[in-house]
Length: 418
Image (cartoon, rainbow, N blue to C red; front, side):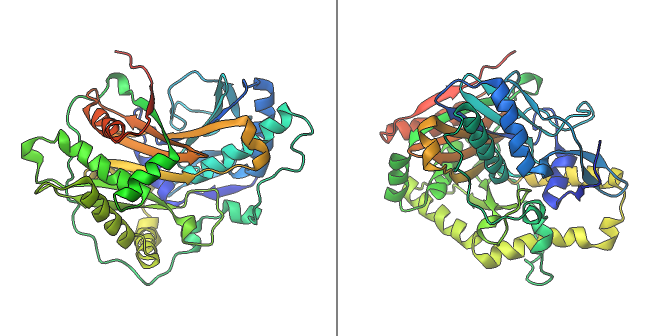
């Protein structure tokens, strides 16, 4: 029976709801690999117990006249053996009566797939960690009775719309100019709306040293290396186009928020390859530009700009069937200004008592082009790459460069069907 608990969707969620499709399903996956084979019955119990702590995910998304909203439903979560591609379709006309997340398992890996309108990657990781804790508690009775994740978050804090909570009327960025088209990978996309997924493992200490040796942070270094990989196969006629990398930023690092819903914004770093530039120089340039974008003042202005649009009365009163196509078109236009996306979830930590049972974590996000999701656990740095094209030259350029630097690279890839 449905309850009277409902949530209005946040502004980021509105973009996902208007722009999902069969290739870019607007869903993401976070995975935990254990050191023991998964027992389905115990995993089912673990998911239900974790959901008791995150009831805001036990919802169905409905369309109103002017906005979408999420309504709490007493529907069993899907827990099954892995049977489809990562980041599957979790919202749409064909998804009826099912929650907008699912949990699957394969041998010793637990996968949490979530429609991005429910939460962002950091919220997903938090939920997965609860599932893992509850699973191990079931698999090893009495061993982890006193283990928990320390948090000051209240139930209200977990479910709040932090975009609304921290919006300020003042402090806006100047009106943005037209989106400048970025260089984008050319060529045929994979058939049947497929994506190919690559999982790349490297030692944390080695990749951090490489970034430091090039005078930048890890995220800035990855940005520079990806730009150079894209530039290597750029046609001559495209050389005047900027290579622009979009990077989602966790706003919880800037605001006192514990929400488990979406709370991120994106920053953009661009470079035009008008002349030759070294990896070190480009890394330092990316680092400088990224730091300029990540000041508290710039973060606040960007968030306020985005939130202000939704507060305009005439926007609020436009019916949803008109809003959705407009939002989808705006999202498509914005994507023309992006060459690729890098999302760094950072270091994933677990209680010491659980570490002997956990091998590692990984993450992916759906895309219509090229999306890299990074995370690290202990000494394992993982990049989950989602890629829409037949030609994988950019992936080869990107990863070969790490191997040439002496980094130990382990690569796994999904199959493609014709």
